[in-house]
Image (cartoon, rainbow, N blue to C red; front, top):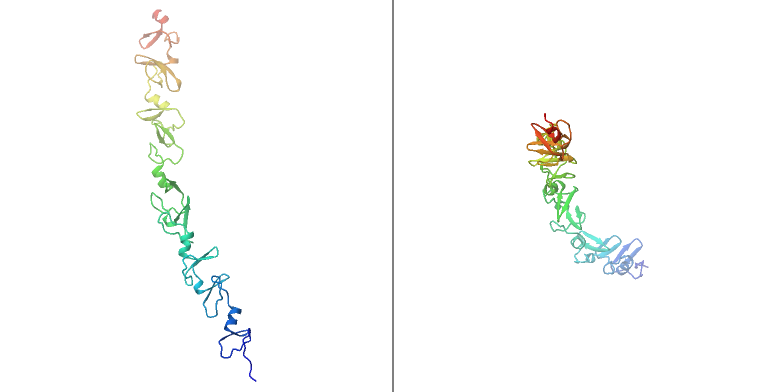
Length: 288
């Protein structure tokens, strides 16, 4: 009696039929596929033993079903990306989910180095200073009306310049004659003392401290010979409120304008010139 050779599943004879041998015995082709074949995640059909099977993570596909869900391109031999369980070729993924470089207009590919600012994206090599056109990379920059500048270029282009040294003012500074100055550049033309925060005046557009201006340009008091740091003509007030009196080509501090004999103040009083001196009415009438 001959030994039987039947399918391990349906028990039908396999003599003269195609079969597949497994560790648990031989199977006819239909039984083998029904028992061991995976179901295609795309078409939901069994992936037969004679079909090329592809899988990704825990999903299995016929070779023809393994394709981009948007353009239907086969992904069997193409790089791809999975987005929300959908398979996408690189072109479709970039078109749908990648940013466009604001400089060159090309796609910023996933995984490439990029820079983002103000809702815009750039390739790292496309994000350039609008002044020197060098890549900004991780350097500090200043945005201005759609342009981007490295700090040196921005200061050189937009920062105010000191009227004295013509270098940019990056912080602080003072204003003199409606122009910006470094605090350290605004100094007395005479003694070089810093004038920021100090009382000073000018002559021929050059600044002077009160002391130097008085020594160099102010008239001298005819009595004490010290400078009178004030205006000219009549009776007025000098710098710091120092009042003075003028007569012909001579000038006196208020405190110095007194009778040469009795020392009575002559401010607001009548007086009589006597050579280089001035006398009150009484001393003048009294004679020598």
